[in-house]
Image (cartoon, rainbow, N blue to C red; front, side, top):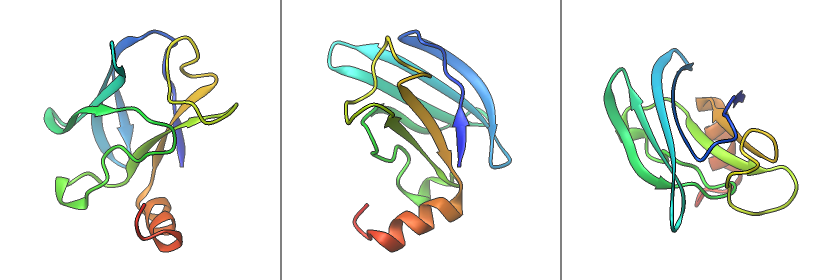
Length: 109
């Protein structure tokens, strides 16, 4: 598991290496909450995914992304929002082994 550094602003795009994958992450605020897009080497993996506390973002192996992303509220159980990104609300990259452990513990996760 790896913490992904994010700025405490409601709109940001950055490049990061995750599990050997060159990724671009776009985080943006809408009236209904915070959303996230992930691309790998310029190819969209997921787009417009609602950011929710402890809810995996990529979810499906067939998308070709190794691992997953997840937000965690370190002070409760709220969905992420700004202010608080990168401090209260942490974005994590879960390696394939982390995802396998989650699924072994809860196959419906």
